[in-house]
Length: 156
Ligand code: SF4
Image 1 (cartoon, protein in one colour):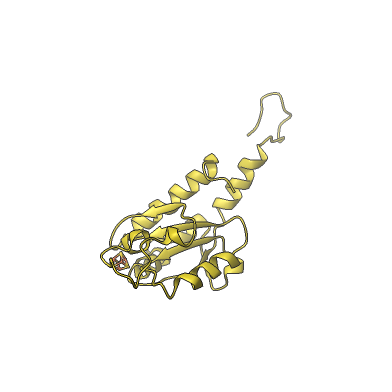
Image 2 (cartoon, rainbow, N blue to C red):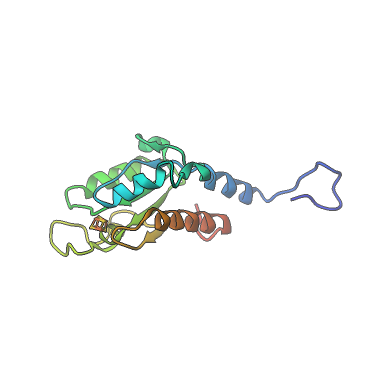
């Protein structure tokens, strides 16, 4: 921000704040829809809700170009190592949103075939509740993640 003792046009800013600002305004999401919640995630990126407003125009097909994983839907035991591999291939810094009851807890599927919470596989930064969470809920989760990064609450 401009300081009163500085000449006009001279800006001072905390480098971390600039970095956090840039990170939150250019998040790229890796494509990782697993079940019905993914439909709501896709709707969030479509014209009506317009994630592009937040610099999130494109869902990336490659984890190497992504810094946000939205786990949208239930995670089977068979999918768990794949999910972890995709996460490992994402460059640092990176964040994870667990979208919906199934991803966060297994939801109604309390059985041996499904992971009972994706935080057993990857570190989760934000949990978005609901079955399914609507686009507004997911956007609230994304903006909460932005706030936490900006405040330094989530250190990367
Ligand atoms: S939380 Fe509901 S909508 Fe989402 S994957 Fe599970 S059953 Fe489907």
